[in-house]
Length: 192
Image (cartoon, rainbow, N blue to C red; front, side):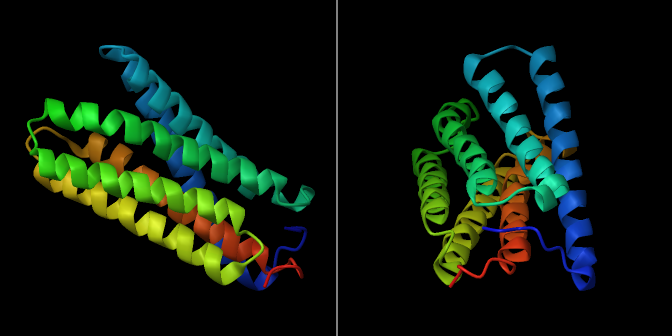
């Protein structure tokens, strides 16, 4: 992906990308601080650190994309997001079980996370095929958002506004990656 061209007519998209990236990074820093203030678990620390790195990677990509060439820098962002989904897949069964949710609901959330993870990996493999790649990342974002909304509704007595923000920042990160892909891919003549 050659991303040297930033269209002046679409500066509002760039502004939204920066806003989402900055907000996500701030929420991730806040989440990391909260993680170290509470009971530390290996999975909790890993999830918080990977979430922060994923948000920092998209922020760096969005802010410095005019200086980058090729798909390598964007693939780093995609792999960071895949790592975040992967760690949440490992962590979610453990966390959901602690809140007394049914096995069926736990399994459904885990399946959503697994399919979202697989779709992000497929997205990374199809970056040069716009239609296919958009379908993969959009499906991943929709599944992740659906899973997070279901958890928020089912666990409403255990969570507060801060947990909702942290929870929704993950699908919004995926949406930011989708917007970044659509925004910058237009300048690559190799994309079908």
